[in-house]
Length: 576
Image (tube, rainbow, N blue to C red; front, side, top):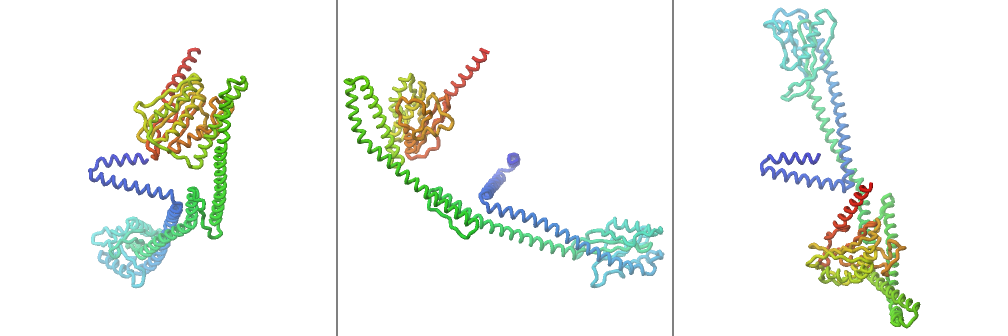
């Protein structure tokens, strides 16, 4: 519907002059902004919705009640006017029947006019009585004769009296002339409009046969009843507006009592979530809102206490790890020196002792790596890790980081393929930390690559640079993209490791990436391998808006998978 309206407006505007088109488009744009602000305010404010709904409902109720009250009052006024008019008609009719010459047909037009005028003057209202107008007319047979008058009245009876009333009175007079009893009065009122004092006002008219030759008509203006009804309507409208405004004010006041504490609770919760653990709500009274404030304060106090305990425990744990790592370095140095002496003299030992010496040397190296990683992770936990950023070529860092992984890949029958931009890729990074990230990623890719090639891709745009390491090994199950960065987590605990990792490599890599203000993300599927993507800003401290490399299989992998599936389908069809 909105789209159709926009098309219609666009078509209509295209036919208008340019100046008028600019004005219309400005008005439409202003209307759109105003409606958006109102809609936003409506959905954001509970108090506005309550007050607005109360205002609309109360206005509808007041309007309906006012309409029915007006109808009832108008009906009562009309009924009272009809009753009074009917009584006046009966009195005037009885007076007219006492006139001499009523039952004698007029012998001439002058005689008829004299009787009609005298009767009209006789029946005119006196001071203090009900205001009405009288008209005396001849029946249709006499009125058609030459020289006979049709009306004797103080108003234009022919133009004012409705034809339905004239026809009914004529029919009643004919019935009475034929000896039928008929009705004494034609009591059905006819509503019409007359002019009183230069203003049009509703009126009711009565007609009655007067003997066999004359007809008597009365017109009762309802100007007083009309003024009374207008006064009532004005009063009802004023009272209705006042009542609606009062209801809206009451609804606003009541909702304010409820909404304000809720708003205070929302602001307090926001400050609490922002780390202001000392935030509390003011408790006033003993109602439900006071109970809410009390419960919120109890929750905040309990949360603050638990967070303090957890922070103290975390500090103790970090201090313990740091102290243990430092304290173990001294005995490890002594053990390493002794192990190196034994390792250098392993040729003089028997085969079993020589093998034990080699195992001791490798495990000492692994233990030293674990101590180094524990110290590094403790620095990140303590927020004392420092970024030493400088301009560097990421392509050069990738090649230097791949030396150890390249040897491991060759032993497994695979290789590392580089997809690097020819002009290089400069970015402000900490060389040591980026090299450590890439060594972890490359070694993991070769370790889990099942002897297949590993692809390293480097790309950059104006704001960011990215490095993606793609393997075609076992891959990751659903939900493991985040678990791989947890400390000491392993996808398959039963899987044998060949590189002696500590289980902290990816966790440290993630912290190094965050220290750069960058991202380290993973993608993987079972049987399709995995992708680890490092994205860093090209200028240190600049926020990231996106990555120049996709997180997932590249187009070559997609095409290869599609071709393999097609070949399998064709092969199956041929065998079938």
